[in-house]
Length: 355
Figure 1 (cartoon, rainbow, N blue to C red):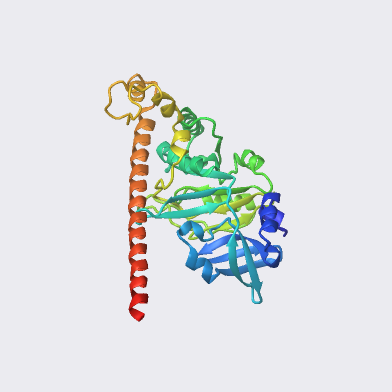
Figure 2 (cartoon, rainbow, N blue to C red; figure 1 turned 60 degrees about the horizontal axis):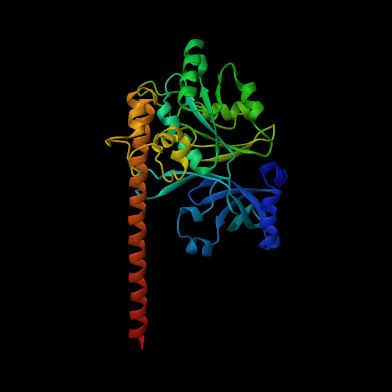
């Protein structure tokens, strides 16, 4: 397998040459396990760790490698490697880290398209789709909505679901599939391009692992059934892994996500809720919050039935969440800066006392 099969392109090659990486191997991170990585190069797969200096100089989680990254590395015998440098990313999908205020979790990098997967029989939720869509829009990743497990409901219900999605979410492809009969797979396979990277986003139990197995033609991922007691999906995929499909597309599977916190929605909310932002241009006040103000065009549109109320409420919820995350992250940066000053002064005093 050559690097082009993994998505390597002329821009990456230009960066490699400009930074004199001729003495390093080039590879792509195909799996991540708690700061240990599996990297694939043109000669094979390697278990890798990052260089100590790289760990020391890292300022945030984004400075560490993640699945999908291209890296410069030194390879050794016994299939071991040391990562020295991460190539620039053209996209990065991230969310709020669960239970860690102001922190982010990187889902994948260098992604061209994201499959937003929901199960028709139990997981269907357009509010959640808008949340995934916002993450994609802020990450410069093109979304494709996949409605799975359509064999578990009747065709009229499938049609109604697809129509309800298209009513609220414009200009995003929607493909209904059955993992059992493979209905819809022809349409899905037709949009997967050689050398492009796709990732799957969705809750546990929506059929992501089965979808990957069917697209690859191999039993790569273990699959499991829905819990009968909770009606929730069980976590089968425990880590992220990059797979090259038979048609040349590159697909990353992800563990199911029950929480999809907005970490950085710069531009993402505006693209997802473009109708609201267009209406806001006619609000009486420039700093209108679209909640209680008189002369608010957004509120007027909701009251007149020109704007879907559920979408409006979902927007307000994500806007509050975004503001909370930004303020929490800013507080965290201030505390880290203050701590840095304290340590700097401490070292100065320590140095003076030695003399």
